[in-house]
Image (cartoon, rainbow, N blue to C red):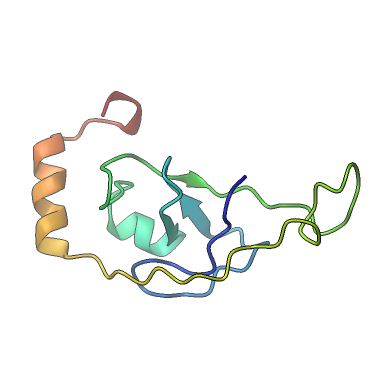
Length: 101
């Protein structure tokens, strides 16, 4: 299941479990919506695109599939993006949309 990482890797903004601003790539790299915009929807770690992170239910609606039984992660991965290196990645991708990368 998703780790639900607690903050943006680039700016370290808090992204609590119910945040509608959290975005993840296929490897669960986690960024806020503002940073995803700055990164042109391109993960600086893998080159893939981002999608909104699902919100895990806070209440036990069914089968213990909720935040209380499966809490959000607490490990912060603060790795500010090297924007010069990211610009080279974007140039290499030549505008390819995420599903074609």
